[in-house]
Image (cartoon, rainbow, N blue to C red; front, side, top):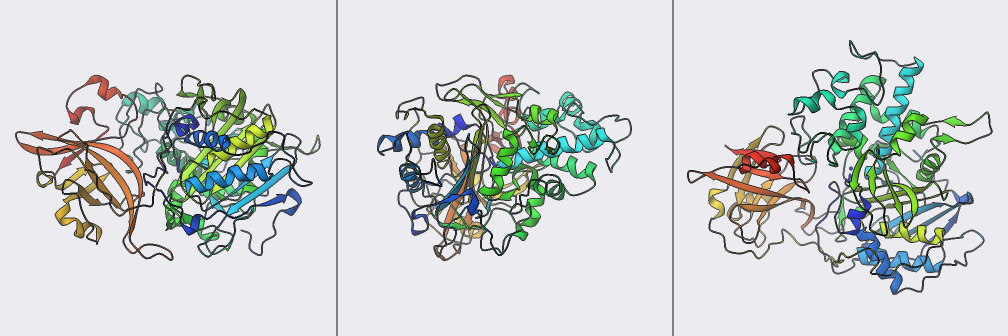
Length: 599
């Protein structure tokens, strides 16, 4: 949900930083049969499918591929394809091979208004091909639907057609309205000032001061940075905002989106209910970056929780309608009297304007990056753009709109990871007529080839002055709940299997939204610092392959604390920068983003 994302900063992606919601740490070196690239089909807009059932790092890869591919800027094209020619096809197939992507589809809305679709790879283990009407999860691209929904609901109140009254004493409902006023008795942070002052813009532009805490999803999280001073990508705020839509529209958030956005745009293949598409042949299966089949990341019950942060399910044909709406300022353009406003202009302008700084300086490829309301605002190689990506287990997506150049590109993939985003920028360069960038332009990070996932991989670490025996036990935090850490000697109890274990690692079962298990690995050269790996463990495999494997998700840091010779707990650190707690200083308990007592 980057759901996600989770983190939508494209520059961060080019430097190897993955989204919180879809981060995978597998190292892969071989391509599995499921990721075999097949020749693509070009589709003209008139070929929109009529199926029987209808309900960063990336840029570095792109530059390297262009250096070794005969990529011409003047595309020959065909009668039905101006940009998706054989040269670009070669680039896309290289991206898929290097990133072990099982399948992807994309759509292009060109400056002339013509539409092109392309599809590559497989949507099933048996080799059924991806087509432009293949349905995927879109992850954090869903966030822009939430900001639009809030704006539509605000307009309902302004027009006097609202169904639900505001709380006592609240006289207006707009982007300046305080969350505490809308949710009296339901909204509270650790800091009294942020509790009272957080408004809806703060909520959706990631400046509430609340950290990511994707492993908790609880109302008891604590603020991490100074209110309105620091961008911190946070999916829980979008969960909160979707709840506000439900509460004051009188209908579930997912139904609101379908009635007020998807239906008017004729996005007939799109939904926020996995159970409505799960039985369709067009609904793509999903893969890990290691090439292993994995289940879709959320069932219908779970999706109800995270729908606002990452719940939309769609195909590129529908998403191109959404991108076209953004190009047209939130309006479906018809004749002068028949144009239909979907997103109120005030909301559209706020959503596509930066409110928090994601990256304060340009690097030659991207300008300063700012986050709006479900959209990232930046300039790519001198061209203004509004974009967002999406990520979750088995989901990778991107939508890039270039308003001044009048085109848009959407991409959906059934394999987690950021490499597919290179395709979007390759197409943008083609449309913009930009010269092929060199492999050294702006991107200094190193791309590390990945290998097939291994079961609970161990790391060689420096000798520690303590054993895991005094760290094992049950730990508790009000937001995260209780969980029990076991030493490797007890790992069979935790995982149900007995792989070769690192005696310095700790293990636990997870009952939270993301992941099935937690693995703690000592940080070399330290005594009480551990890398926390939140992961999905498939003891009996998944799909056709029944061998056990691991699909890592997030990695954070934990630091245990000892008092009078006894371990009293540990602090969890999820921040990517220095927090106000760290600036203040103190013990691990004082500076951690979340503290767990040993019980």
